[in-house]
Image (tube, rainbow, N blue to C red; front, top):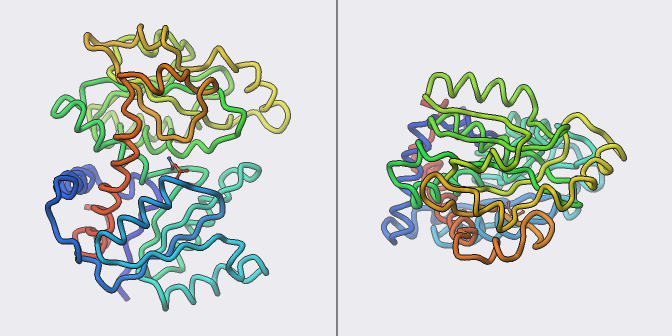
Length: 331
Ligand code: CP
């Protein structure tokens, strides 16, 4: 049996593979490439929590490539009646050509990623992580395309500030982790600004820095919001649940940070590396919570470009999974 290629973490792709995927995404965005390369394929979308961008962009990507996409909530399958993952994947293996999965529960950190890994181990088809409690590789592929479009050949040297921002909702650190690992793989410069108690998981920071040491990248952590945005080309708002605080302690700590940890117009005015910084946001975010409306809707906001790029990068990913470009282990 040929082992299928899965995308559970951004580092399941090599730097060379990411660049090749972005090249194809750019071509597809220009309207080049086949619109029937996935004809006859069936892509399952299994989500245990809601999604707008990921779900719809995968559905449109599949349609534009000639494939069929089939979305299911976990409550719609017999999983809801305690059917095992082994039996579920054993059956889906026989029907589908790829499975896109979003799975997490903020009360059980790490269990979502474990669930995806278990599915991938059982699957004879590619399993694609559509956001779990560890990673969001598909979002970050779109962000990398956006950075390439914004900064061209300078993308590696322009610093991106990933800024923890208050949200009343506990969010997964998936985008943060995948962004750190992608920066490390590609030799980019990233600053992570976070309040006390909200540092990225130590093992992710350690691993990203080890990879960055080889690629020429840089991963800097700071608790100083204003310092973080000085010298940066982009400010990216993100929110994630603390890795060390639990229960009410975490909620109270986060609530105390409301207002202070938010991307505001004065903060954006300090954000420059000689050129005024752009504002990035994977969405969803709420105006007045993670970010002020005048920033989110302002002239330096590139959030809809990011959202659009979900479509182009996922079309490139699906194409390369089936045309043999992505096969076996990462190169
Ligand atoms: N950014 C993102 O993954 O959005 P959705 O939750 O709407 O898919």
